[in-house]
Image (tube, rainbow, N blue to C red):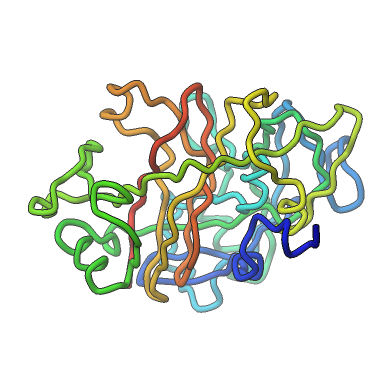
Length: 312
């Protein structure tokens, strides 16, 4: 079997890069790099098993899009999106949160921002955890800061219009491959889309997994291609059955349209006994084309993924 025959990613998807961008007041920054001060490290990689831990990340002007006005940054609504190939390997990265789910005050403050504007670096804390137990040696680029402004979110009939105009191109039939839902997660008929808040994309039956390696083995994971070489079809006797790596039917976003996957399960899904949560890798970049790979954690199989859409 040749390399081309065994690829689970289409060639064009392997070539897509996570990038920085702005859409109105919404934006995604450039990749952040860790300061590797932990004992478990090797070269410019970091080892993650089942244990969770903290790491330092340095932020400077290059962490933000080049055309962003730093004087207008909304510090209270900045989050972090894990690099997609790390998330698909079961590596979860997030900004540090205290037990009450509030960000530690020194994550990024106004004083930090003033230093950044002067060309200095500042430090924030992130948390890291592994869902498979594998120890990965990966690149120190771990994710991007982002902010999605509610003024740029598309809702109501505007969501359906994006689909009709081909700006959010979805193949298939309404109600089977996709639908619109309200803020509570209830599916809407095509004639009641004025209540629409999210696009719901139903997942295909395809499920992938990462093999579970011996605990003493350190696995190289430096790129999406490294991930692709590890991925295989899911086996029922998997040692990580709670980690669900699935995908949607193909979609295409216009260059002025971005998506944000909801990383919580709506109440209506709980009522149906659907419990999986999408991990912290929610960004879908403007111009994305292909099947969206999703990463869920839970006891039951996910059936869909919900996404907000934002445009300038």
